[in-house]
Length: 256
Image (tube, rainbow, N blue to C red; front, side, top):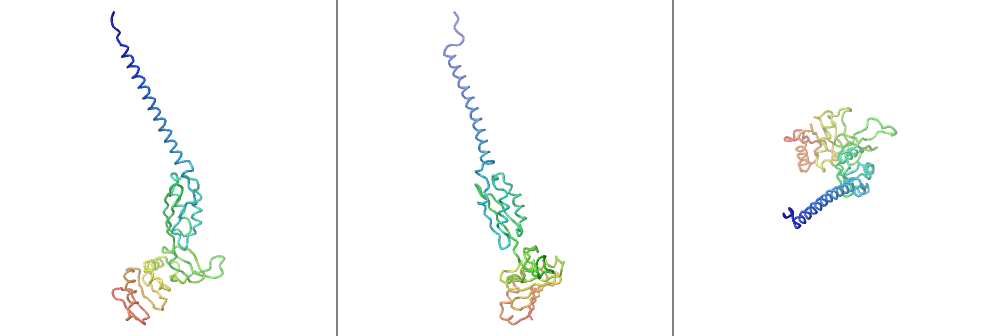
C-alpha cells in the first residue's frame, strides 16, 4: 500500500497554524475595534462632554484699566458657557470682546480644563477736550475724555486734575491727532506737569504747564528730543523764573 500523502503529524501542524491565523485575525479585529472605540470615546470626551466645557466663573480678565467694565466682558464670555474649549472659536470671542466700550485690544487664550484668560488693552484717557454742546440729558457742557487714538472713552463735568485740557479747532482731526501724538509720547512726569495743550494747526502746538510756564512746541516731529530738552531746561537753575520755553527747534531752544 502507498503511504498517506499527509501524515498525522503534518495535519496537526496545519490545524495549529490555521488556529493561530484565526486567533491573530481576531486579535487584529479586536485591536481595530478597541482603538476605534477609544478614539470615539476620547473625541466625545474632548469635543462634546462637559469635562472641558467653558465655565465663565473660571475666566480671568486683566487689563481693564479705568475705563472697561469687567462685568460687560464676563457677560460676553458667559454667552459661550458650556462650549468645550477645543470647539471654542477664540477669534470670534475676541471680536465680540472688542465691541465692549473702552476695549482697544484683547488677547483670548484657553486655560485648561475649563477656563479662559482674557488680557485687555483698555482705551485709557490721555486728554480732556471741552465739549461744544452739552450731551442730551446733561444740563451743562463739560469735557470729553479721549484716548490716544482720539476715541471718546467718557466725559466729565469738570476738567480732570490728572489730564491736560486740549483745545483745537472744531472738526480738525489732523490737528487733534498731532496733539494726541505728542501727549502720548511724553514721559509720565512731564505729562503730569501739563495743564493744557492748544493748537491752531499741526505745526503750532503750545502747552501750558501747571506751574504757569508756556511751552512753544511746534509740530509733533522730534517729540522725544523736545521732551528731553524741555525736561533739562526746567531742571536747570538758569531757567528759573522764565515764562516761556521754546523747543520748536529743539537743538536751539529759547527761554524768555
